Length: 405
Image (cartoon, rainbow, N blue to C red):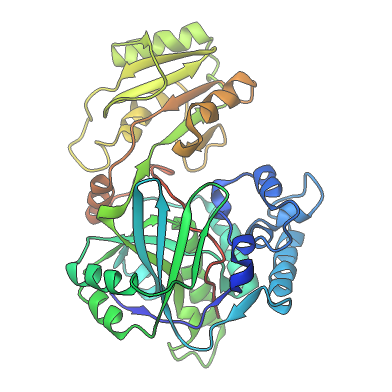
């Protein structure tokens, strides 16, 4: 794999905690507004700029992208974002409890993305990809990194340990308790040589960000009659983590209605389709174990064995779709059907019960998480998981290092 150092736009150390924010896609507009209240420096005001517009504003309206550009400019002109004078790489460590993961912040090439040397495991949702494409193009920047993974290499692990002996550039605890530590590496020739021995990278989190970066790069090539291939728009911002350090939580589902069925009819259809149904707790204990929340109660059912012996068909999410979502609830394409929504496992039982108890949705499904091994197998097979299959935790922060072009 080819990686490159870059002259990052990054927070001044005195304001790094105010600037760095959660990724745009893990919070709702209302949550982003709450997180950024009384904090004019939050990167959420760039990646979710609708929070600075009147309530009910179209999150994809022209004024959102104009506001994002305005807020980004203010951070630069006000000195909250500063430019590293030299091309650098950065080691980025996240720590929560006894979990640590250490990745390299670097640029990757859009040709490697297009040629599937950077492998994907999910298709994007068109509206969200269009949104990130427009934001990236408007800013001329990648404000948040794509989370990539690779099968670990001992040579890279040794480089990591050498860097961690130095004084960090940033070291802070975010409000959610996650510790973020960053070391500046310099031009990183050893790292570039080490990653040249890595045969493939995998998109773990950030399919929309990587797809939009590649689209913007292609657009800039077409519109530049003097294109040489050396321009910064040929590259996009990533953090690369070894697969053995990653932690995946479930990505659960809620559905807004029961497709014309009563609760009793729906539960009967579930039992008929799976052969089992009983009241139980909210957390699946093993693969094929699915928990269903409806009418104020949790139920457990066991998914049948997959109909086909391949990496995607064996996923619980795929079997759920074939067994219940499509035939019972009429959810055909999870990427585009507005009746289904996705709830990250970090939100816990409350995140699933809330929409049902409030009447905003009719039924919730709690799933056993996908493994890192399953993710790599699916990507290696050239197939795609259903949308929103993996929730990685902890989340990388946006704004810690920004690639501009």
